[in-house]
Length: 457
Ligand SMILES: [Zn+2]
Image (cartoon, rainbow, N blue to C red):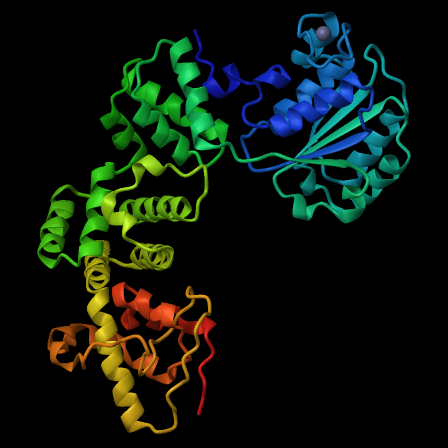
């Protein structure tokens, strides 16, 4: 017996089965029941979220012998024919391989003919953005004056490549990425139906990894079933998907938050012993911090239960900074012959960010003393914090006494600094200082800076 992949077996056959796109399916159903089906629709959104399935359901719903109905019966002769792809009135075209003007001209010739058995001729053009300009122009003529019996359904992942002339003649539906909780619930349904044992946490991991694409999530579940059979332990998920246990991510964050040098060294050697994939670790960290960030700015879809106490101490600005640094380190280690060392250096820098700020102060002061061209900037109370550069030479909020005494241990960091000297201290708001106090170190900003224009004195 051949195995049918989950994505095909669980492909929705009714509007009600389309997961997470009620804003579209309900609208279409209302259009059908009220006899207001348009002549052309364009369905857009990322891959694997139900665009083509919805197009096929719509094709059946308008042609069903028991309809047009809010749901196709999927049993009458016409529905069966369409499902089995042998109804000549419902034509599915792959825009990627039939994108020439000749292809569209051929299509135009058949468009005029009345349907053979169905009520409406339906043309589903997948990946419609792949059509050439002249093909779009040819299509435009048909869209301007479509015969009564014709329904066009376009699907695309790249709506911005579809000309406005086309868009203005079709009804547009934007499919959403499917929320992880909705996706996990759907996967649970599949597992219950197929008698597959799998912990909830595993389904959460799959749902997050799929990034909104149900088809991808089902593919990952397939992969796990192939690996573990019908009893899937959490470890299998970590192993197969190359996902790090959450404890590692949380521990890493904790060390950064607490500037725990001793812990950092132990942690690094544990990571190395465990043969961790540093790229994966960085991506997982990014992901985790993103979640925290969303939770912080009040996104309802973020999983607040997963807040770890250490991560909670990070402000949104801290998190943004860390995400950026992790992403930069990720691309650095891809090019590096020694990813482990790259990661370790980066990690130790993050742990020391707090002190880096202090050395920045010193440098700024030195700059102030050495080159008189840069006058100390006036304090600016409220500006966005994200794109910070060097901290101010004399920050209004730093009440502490001079930090010079603490500078010696920072020697290692200094080689990175010279470029920042070019960037004369820009005006800094008070909240940047608050941020810098914890994180926004000078050292790491050297690379981030282009956003703030240096003020040449
Ligand atoms: Zn039917």
